[in-house]
Image (cartoon, rainbow, N blue to C red):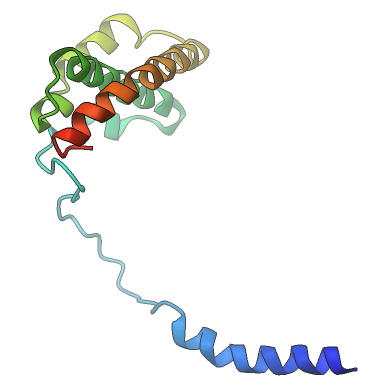
Length: 139
């Protein structure tokens, strides 16, 4: 009998506390169009517009390009030893061109296979890239 009463008392005491800490709800549905702020390198080049306009069923194409973009940037960082914002976040033109030339016409399964390979490459590059970028304050 003591346990149910103790549980009831605890619930009664916790109710007001939960009500005080719940987030405020707003009816304001306006979209905030201010530029996204990042922890590092806020002056990043804009992604290709087709990535934002793509049909959701083909989102794997945009994901593949993002993976390719990062791999190419990390390869450059590892090769040059430079992790400036311009090197870490280069223009998309080169990666976008490579993607359209070599990968855009492939199936979703083929995209997935390439992405798995690129993720492995990224894992191999990460220790050296992380060391370089941390030393320059861009990790």
